Length: 333
Image (cartoon, rainbow, N blue to C red; front, side, top):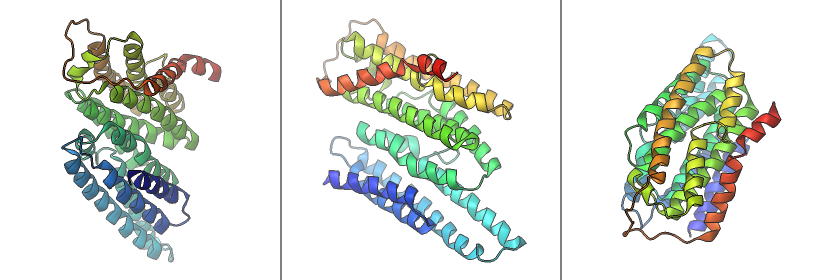
């Protein structure tokens, strides 16, 4: 049954990004929402019901705002005068706001960490990666709303950096990390259509690798990272991918940030703020990495370490790709 919901969720996203009308977009978003909510329920996590209800209420509110804006746009687009031009711009702003609410961009991020904390790792990956595709694609199709976009970029990188500093839950840390990366992706979107897609693909690869590593080792809280099974390769994979997600050179995660910085010559002050905030995110990535490498004789007796060799091999291959960041950067010069 869950496989059927997964297919419907994927279909909903594809309908949204390929539709020629805003009503088709709205329909695809609704199919996606109603398919993902059943996937969120899990007997293994007591907080999944609360998370799914919170997610449904927020997404339903965003969908209602989108539908209201679409109806207004259909009326104002028929007559072009000064008043209708203002209403048209207002509807564009409302659409942008609702799409930001859907993907959890600051300042509309209030629901995102709480929902992430109540999900299984597989659902966390869907929420961090797949559920961002439709809103990001639709925002890229909207007319440029520079003030609103700039405000969201700055708030996303600031909230994503500061919010994760005091967290002990790894899922909440990755949620704030995702908010920070949303800011970078929106900045890339202003600069180039292709740039944000490159950023998103690299972010998706690194996030998927980290989620697989957390799933294999059954890690949920920061103090559990010291109990990573006594496998140097597994610890090294966790270390490299966390630093890669933080954008530390020479790892792959630095490449999209470097491309964005190169193209942000006209936004010097915003670029400086983004770089400084990214350095702050490296603190909690380093904290997680340090815990994994901590020399300790404590042995984990309450968690069952997974022996899924296939997942291990996939995570190792993806980690080796992360190590190729410097080589790819040199080839692109």
